[in-house]
Length: 178
Image 1 (tube, helix red, strand yellow):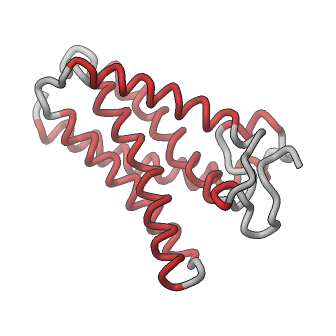
Image 2 (cartoon, helix red, strand yellow; image 1 turned 120 degrees about the vertical axis):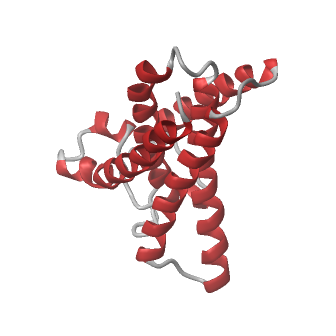
């Protein structure tokens, strides 16, 4: 598979992930706060809940890509998992950095940061998709990361630790189970 085609898939993915993630911001409220939607949709205005908006759409998009890449790219899942992992890392790092510097958050900056993180994750994935091989332990680490992310994003909305990452900036509440 040529570089241009892989690049097109990743750019298309960044757009789809950004749009789907933006939609997921409102799904919990739109569905009457139905608890099962809390697994993938934001339930409050905490930073944690906004990280799910990149993670789940990116994982879904990778699952869509898989049938098209599986025979052409040997280490597809390594590239995708690390690309997905970097999205919440960028969002969290840059959000707290700029909020610390100016003392408050700005909605348009938050939205831009989300889109930037998604594009950065997809471009990181793209670069890894072009690699021919990885060290043997990299796949194990990728699988461990994916399992940890799925577990964390599935459980910590329901059982959040009481720390700033999980605190709803609008209400001071944590998670869905109040």
